[in-house]
Picture 1: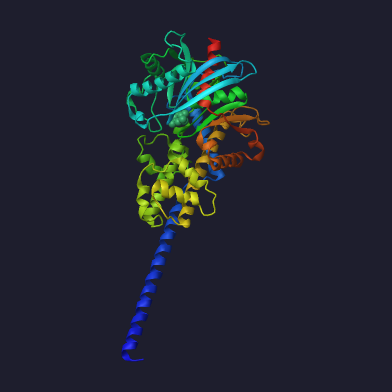
Picture 2 (picture 1 turned 30 degrees about the vertical axis):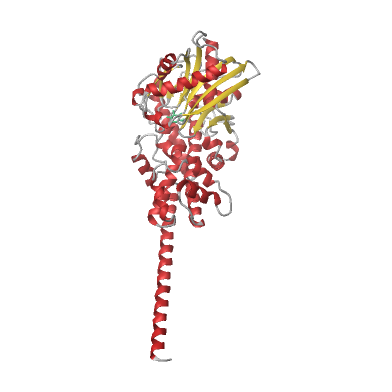
Amino acid sequence: MGRVGLGVAVGCAVVTCAIAAALVRRRARSWLRWGREVAVVEGFEEGCATPVGRLRQVVDAMAVEMYAGLASDGGSKLKMLLTFVETLPDGDEDGIYYALDLGATTCQVLRIQLGGRGSKIINHKVEQHQIPQELASSTSEELFDFISLTLKEFVEREENGIDQVTDERKELGFTFSFPIRQLSISSGVLIKWTKGFAIEDVVGKDVSRCLEEAMSRNGLNMRVGALVNDTVGTLALGHYYDKDTVAAVIIGTGTNACYVERSDALIKSQGLLTNSGGMVVNMEWGNFWSAHLPKTSYDIALDDESPNRNEQGFEKMISGMYLGEIVRRVLHRIAEESDIFGESAYHLSVPFILRTPLMAAMHEDDSPNLREVGRILEEQFQMPGISLKARMLVVRVCDIVTRRAARLTAAGIIGILKKIGRDGISGVASGRAKGKPKRSVVAIERGLYTNYSIFREYMNEAITDILGEEIAQNVVLRVAEDGSGIGAALLIATYSSKR
Ligand code: BGC
């Protein structure tokens, strides 16, 4: 080989070595980064841990806070609101009743026909209407005009155009799914908005009056006969079908629970009550807080940037409005640490872009190569070509967030059962005799439980973890479909027969 040949060969070898070294460096860097994103997920998972010991602490904290909230107003973050519902429907009601159910994203109008003893609900018609997003921050008049007109059109369709103005004044069940300080079974003032609503001129007002004024403005001859929280409606429907129903839980966009409390435990209501021996209490558990709740830096940031900082802490960890957003925050952090989501990862910086139903769809993708996850990332977030490894990481984050939420929800439910001496363990604390635990039915509603099977499985698993298999068999979670609205109509039926 001549000098020139040797020079070329050496040069090639140098270039080859340099390329190889660069490749190795790049791979090492990418593994290092891959290591970093895994570290982000592992750190998050550790922060979200809900071992059974911690769940039991949450159970105890829930029961303790319930006592405190019942003792005095402001005694706890749990408001423990009196509802004035002392009798629950039992199947004997009859007649035709209407209800209007204002939720977070939808408004339902419905009519039920009850057949009296034994025949249950003969007929029911429910219509669901989307609430235009801008109404959530509009004015009282705009919101109540919208819902009363929706109701009016429904009633007219149902009654085939009979003129309501000349008709006998009907009583309406009004489900209003925000914290209300009830003045009676049919009236109450809004304490504060939750779930992204912010119509300041309603706060402090009697929402039944607001609706009645709007109905009269719009020519609908009705009055509010029962004003109920969605949990209370759900409990009413649950009880209508099964007398062992003692509590109800809503786990959808927002979350809350109510239950039947003995009157002697309603310490703060002294003098006001009650003939029947018990009353339904709206806990407003979305605002529950305890140092035992596993809070991460992502939860703190979410809360800091929310319009209702330091409020609805439990809701921000477990409800549908927030689960997708927590996942988005973790994925965004991963994208900052690595390039596994490619150049389009900046889409992940948009708050609330990942809604919980999409998160659930990714989580429940059981195709071998996570095709659905890839499709959602591409179509909804313009993030094409995400590797299988990265898709697996996305699913893992969804799982961590959902598992924590489901297990904490389960702990909340056992906390209620503990407070009323139905957890099969706490007979002494509740002042009741220990013995075979009674069957306790908890009516449950809304999408996180009804449409998200992994959430449901984690919840059921946690109930067994906390109570043990034998006792857990006495706790029955039963879906009360459309309970929030139907229950309000049932309560009108129950109370109008008493008036
Ligand atoms: C509200 C509750 C409601 C729950 C479920 C919460 O944000 O404060 O009143 O029951 O959402 O809709």
